[in-house]
Length: 453
Image (cartoon, rainbow, N blue to C red; front, side, top):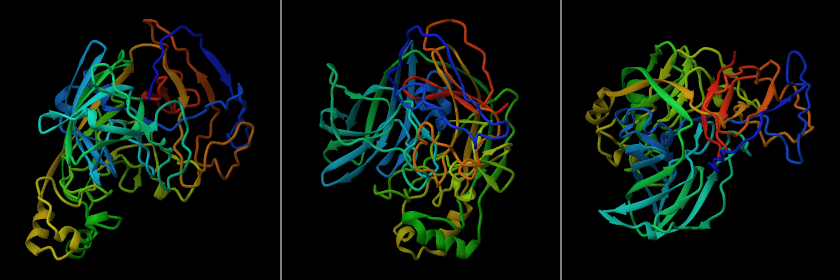
């Protein structure tokens, strides 16, 4: 995600001339030969930026990546000065003697939030032996100051073609900044241990303000359940619908949350083994029915700025914001933590005893509340939007956005700020005009935000 530059520049303020009530009648001029990036999608605060800031006990064993190729579970980490080290367990997808692994970035699929990791390096281990040299090629969901190419019908950002691996002098595999990657390891490895290293100055400070714990149960109800759809049907027939939701009470000053919950023992989605540990969808909500877009892994999630679930939006180009967030929905697990996979979950015919046990099982999630603040200048302040199903690529410079297309974005004057990238001990105060806005690093990580005024 990030060729993080630290050099002197001045602030540049570009003021977009807007109609009083809406962006609908505006043109978006280009300041240079390249179109101006006048908005970006929000991103969650990546696990790499939280290590050494939040207590490691808050993060340990969380699922931080979830994809069709498998996923990544955080084990431990530390920051020493500008160096971050993370130990993770990577669950793979194996095809024809090649095992596919992930980085620590999460890509934007459907309306799920992405999260970007900085450039770094990784070493892979299997059964105690190093296998880093078995890495053959990589494909990236690139990071950077880039807008989505597609709406919420699939992956919103395009993946690069396969490129050959590059190794550092010490034998570690070099990684570009990314919002997800697929690394091909030659060999059959159902899971690998990975040591990631990153070197960069922390752009934020994280203050712990409190936590809440909730007991949740499996999800029972409509929706796509992937490989365990037969189990979903049996549970719904026997028990009816159920989806736990919890009123949350963030402490004063909290602006981020980190939801920690146990890995799911059965992977309902993707092409990897169904026995791979996986994650599940949770959302913030206004009351019981107005749901945010999907969060599918543990990451730093803004508490004061969310966008409405794409399924509830009626097909607009951009998703509307949710004004008030007071509820958390439980992860949508079909199999409880601690249960072993049974073939009946995919093939049907689970016993009443097993169905009852699944129904009654309890799991615990913990919501950690943080206050995140910028610790240095050198970040770019950019307004935020979240695309919907009718989005089909950025609007070219000079092209009007119709009222119908833009009905779901803010109805207030918007200003574009391209912040300086510079050293300095004094952090400029937030300017909320035209927000919600994100504070982005040069490599595309959103490390803080400004809510709507």
